[in-house]
Amino acid sequence: MPRGEADGEGRSVSRRAVLGGAGAGLAVGAVGGVWGGRASAAAPAPAPAPVGLGAGRVAFHGVRQGGIVEAGQAWVEWVAFDLLPAAGRSGLVTLLRGWSAAAERMAAGEPVEQGENQIALDAGPSSLTVTFGFGATLFDKTGLANRRPEQLAALPAFPGDALDPARSDGDLWVQVGADDALVAVHAVRVLRRLAAGLAAPRWQMSGFARTPGAAARPVTGRNLMGQIDGTNNPKPSDPDFAAKVFATGPGWLDGGSYVVLRRIRMLLDDWENLPTDRQERLVGRRKRDGAPLSGGPDAGEHTAVDLAATNPDGTLAIAPDAHVRVAAPSVNGGAAMLRRGFSFHEGLLPDGSPDAGLLFAAFQADPARGFVPVQQRLARGDGLFRFLRHEASALFAVPPGAPAGGYVGQPLLEG
Image (cartoon, rainbow, N blue to C red):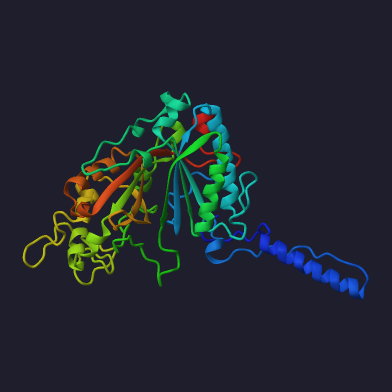
């Protein structure tokens, strides 16, 4: 069922509803005992169907995994796991079967059969999506090295990287997105409990975005620098969308994707000390509406960027080191990715600066033709890079979706 539609089915009874129903039963019994000499028990009232954001539902099973082409939710959790040495291939099958079954129920707003923690019993699905990915190291640990795609080769080192190995890579990746933070946290807790004895958490990151409906009209989200972020993302309606985003092989991955993850800390104190016009020059877009600086006063967010446009004084309207110029597909051999960005803010660093920035996910058909050439060019010539620190990185293969009754990764593990 498409996101944003309620399924209209009854939900599990919340603890509050049970207690309320029990209280009502006691009251009726007391009245009956006084007036009729016979006690009667009232059945607990069913929990009301979720409304609004809580009713949004994305089916778990399907051709593609959720959490790729759907609109970004208000909250995201990324968790990487390492398979325990004794688990092996059979343990991975058990884990992915359990995870897929749990994800199916949670996507429908239902409690799971194993690992349930009762955190989200009162909530609807809230557009929950659960996405699974496989890291390069997983294939050696499961005797599947000969089926590891070459696109999972380690990413090259990029200038300026300061990556923390403890917050990078991993055998397995789980992305949980939802429009309610409690629903997302509940799902992560369930999946972690199901992984006990089979896989251990390696790292976890949490991010947020604007809650749907918070703006007066649908608009592209903003990052913590205040800039509209994601205007030129490929769209599913584009004729070449699938070629940019989805893999065509090997067989078990056909229709899946590759995702590059980056934790990018923003030097917000330094950035916010810049005047707005300087910020706009470094990005190449107006801050208030996202319009390209090449478009003139009547331009809007979706006005095409004109890299050849000049100002009255003959200078380039889009500066040579502006982010939109350096990242443009036209100067990167057509390289493009489907970007999903979420902000993070984890308090203060020892020097008092905010530990905040962007959790960046880029889905693509081939990292060597997508993320890698763009990142290499950005690292060399993007003026925005002076205000960014790339602190963690990972690459995962994201299998296609699972049919009803199946589990994600089944063609790889049982094919």
